[in-house]
Image (cartoon, rainbow, N blue to C red):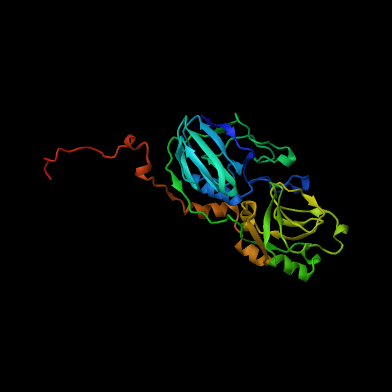
Length: 336
């Protein structure tokens, strides 16, 4: 038996995402998947399930969702205002929703990409081994008001929370050298790492533009470069010397020079940087990057150990009288 979460009102850029479609670059299919994969792991840890379970990704704004059965939901990623039937609920936490209840998720107050997950994951169609929407490949599409998302019921669930690592507001982003890094002069590479970049308004699931007031960054003979394979995290410098960090739905082949590739651990910082946030880039060795790398399953296991019960404040519980607070009564005259 299954139930559903009905999308009563969809935000402007809501899609179903999971870990994407790795291994298909040779077929012209980018990896895709969640923009903030760490948030996907946090969601999975709260619900005690695989990080590859499908979630709703919300870019900048959420929506209104109605439960047709009892279910457990988790909220992670960019901080967004949320309530269930008008009662505010914690972010970076998992909650029980009962049949008929309405979850309302508003605008992001920190970050860009927020995630709504359910116990068991959303049961949407699988294509090429993934449920993720990839708009650049015409796989899936934006969620629309009135859509029905099939879920597995969860009749009993203990609310819980997770303290997450800060990654909003911009920060230092680490990258490793790539095949074209040495095409940039040592002075250009040094200047790139000393420059403070500002996240531009030009950004989506294909790439994020970072502007600066400093010099442009170019290579000699860059117009003669042959197109070759590119991947998520590549820092591509366009003809006018402006860097773009490529995101999950980036193209699979490109001809602009790339000064390096952002390591997976720091891609959440890029994904969650909002317009105006300041970012710097620092090159690290491949050995250091490999030593610090963990895959999504390992990250989820470590996060699961940090999940704790979510204790509600009785002063804010509008349904307090519905709880059995005592197990019985005595007259006071019974023998001790």
